Amino acid sequence: MAWERRETHHVGSYAFHWFSDGDGSWLIAIWSEAKAPSEPREADVASALTVQHIPVRDNPKGKTRPVREFCERFMSDIPFRVRAIRNKVPTLRRLRANGVVPDAAEDG
Figure 1 (cartoon, helix red, strand yellow):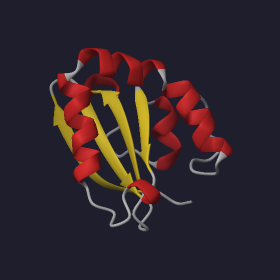
Figure 2 (cartoon, rainbow, N blue to C red):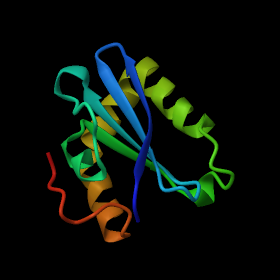
Figure 3 (cartoon, rainbow, N blue to C red):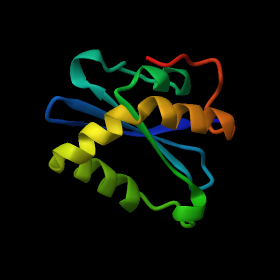
Figure 4 (cartoon, rainbow, N blue to C red):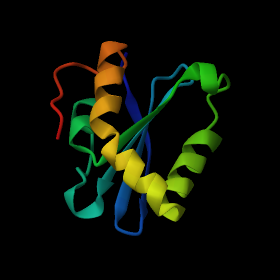
C-alpha cells in the first residue's frame, strides 16, 4: 500500500503529518516538532513519536474528520497522548503484519 502525505499541521510542539492511500484510509504520524522531517515519506513513519491508522472500514468516505478528531484529542487529553505514544511499537507491528506499512522501516 502506498501512502502519500496530504497535510501537515504544526500545533504546539508537535508536527502532525497525514498520509492517505487514496482509497479512504489515513495514517497519522506525529513527531515532536524539533525532530520532524520536513518532507516525511512513508518510510519515515517508524521514527515518529506515534502512529495512528484509520482504515477505510471505519471511514468509508475517506473524510478527514476522524483524523482531525484524533489529533485534537491527542492535544487535549494527556492520558490519551501518553497511551498513543506508548502504543506506537505495537501499532507499527500490527500495521506491518497487515501490510499497511512496509517492513523496511525500523521502530524508532
